[in-house]
Image (tube, rainbow, N blue to C red; front, top):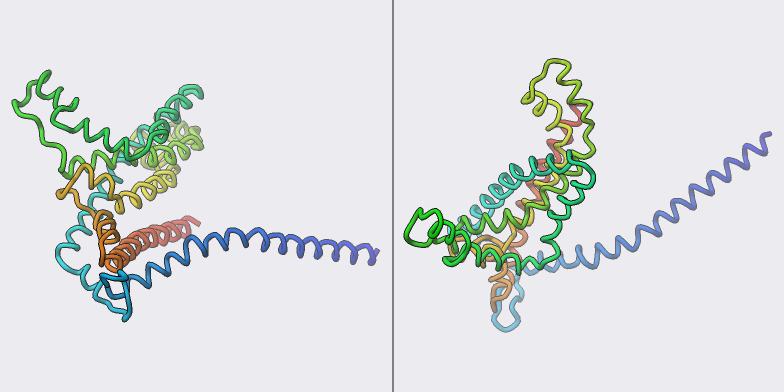
Length: 299
């Protein structure tokens, strides 16, 4: 009896050791990938951000803080603030559009859901640059919007100037990022137990109370995931602002792109990149800390 128990214990210990060994083995490929394609490039960017610009070799020693001090100039602070503001507005508007749209899709029949999801995903089949150029035509003086305003509605006698404006940048970003808001919201709502809505009605709650106290809290993870997926690429966007906004839509991503492709701008571009990364990291840290506090209070 004791021998059988000892044998079972040894067998269990051996299996645990095998599982630990297998786990370590499986982690190594991912760890190597992260080191080569994330950690090392990030270290290079950090090193570049402290180096001195040079026309011959682009960057050289000694290390300096001038690149970060340059970011404190009014010109770059205004661009940085504009980037944060545009990203926030884009996130809010896509959330206001994406939540009802995701709710609508999630509450349809299976065939209808698949059809609407296909419509959401179809833009991904086309290159993002091509879709942005399409917006250049849509917003141009000879585009369909001006044709509607001038020829059919006759609201004005001159074409609307929509290209090279902040509004054009917002429209382009909202269009490009909307699927990233809709899909996680749809997934969250699809898993929602609608019997909770019936229970809320039985307890006397109206539509507004049911939404705020039952539906929204249960589907909030999808909404937050969508906001993160929209905010991060929006704040660093440079293709859409360059094509649709021009000088009026200049954002931090455009500044980084211009700096990196200039002769002596790589150190400054690296510093801008790290500042942008820091802003995003701080925003995510604040969110996750608050989420942990809310989870602990509920627990």
